[in-house]
Image (tube, rainbow, N blue to C red):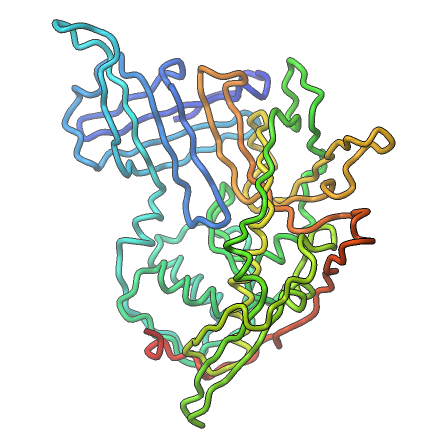
Length: 428
């Protein structure tokens, strides 16, 4: 299934949707699509989506719906993108129009996921590794258990496992366990992500994404709407503020492990300011002033290595912190150079007549997620909602009054250090 580009404007990027049923296939006409959206997210391991469409041709009568139907989406203009998905749930089939003696048209509403979803969550495996990096174990899981998907951004880990046993676990559980205890070879810190975008499967730390040199060079601008719907024109935006409930988890705390050889507890402590200083902050100044509380949280983990206890804390800290200030923008649909995990630049207009840009909010943002959305009932018909992470301020006059924490990343772990505490059987 392929569609040739006709050189249309960006809001008219081409779209083709086909459903493969037990008895045959049906191509859905674009004018019959009420809503189609799917999301790629750095905090999600696969793409998920929703489709609503009219069925004027009787696809419902082609055969029974068994749950084995597949959905193919072909989209793009400058470059053709095709995703193959499995229908996860058919939410409703409803009548639209008609009377007592006429069936009218049916509307379908269904949810779909990529194949990798079932491989990650529905299958169980037992396997062991000796003297292997955690990143190489994740790579083996992708190759053997996840049907060898395309690999995109991949950051090697520092930690080497003397013995790792996967005791009839789902791949998702094993990857989560490894992520919490790993630090990036490039970033030197915890905070690994395992996600899929249009480039393939990614295994990389947030810090490395934040410090990437692959940046969309065309700034995104607020206002200045035109009928041509320029690619980087922001059609609407929303700023989501801090979550006070989650803030208690980033104030700091104590983590304890147990060394069975010496029969003693191992303890590490972390503070907000120390953690901020280690990580990459877009702009340099943290969102909050020093809100450190040494005993904000206390956790008992099964690990006996202080470096691993630090990785567990940093993995949780940086993911929670980076979601404390989120910006949502809606832009005309575009495929090229736009994907979750990428960096873009925003030119945020200032309300101060004496300066052009907002000094605090201008700068680079990490794309947390992209919702690709098509609807014949909106203009432009193809839009994308970008959820952006801005984890620091570029500049602020308030710095003179409010003492924000300055980021100064330092090396934490030693590359290639072997740890003997990786015994999966000790984890309940």
